[in-house]
Length: 121
Image 1: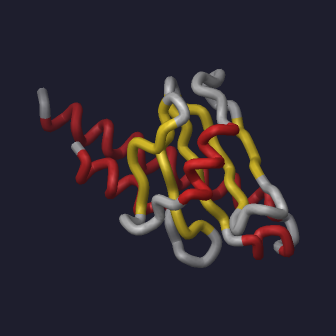
Image 2: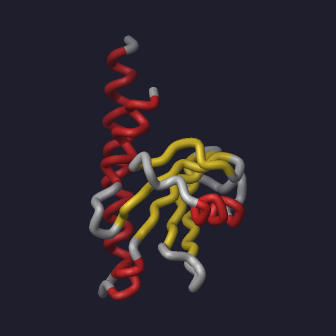
């Protein structure tokens, strides 16, 4: 199970804009990629994200005190949180870029779910 989660999370991390991704549940980081990115900052960010969100809710977190920009998307009882480099602030039309990342992620998740369902039939 953790291998599949790591595979999905690694798809989102490109190293150019998105340099880390986390799954949060009830204010706690339950999974992340790459392996060395569990920092004090993400633990603080987790405190600002509600424990339950309406599916599809998007949260954007930025503070002068943060080293990164965070965007979270509610998926059932969890949040997928992507960590962006601050260079995102200087990209023209940044919103379409963010939407592209979410689309890539959702397509890959559906592929893995279908693969798991076929494997278990």
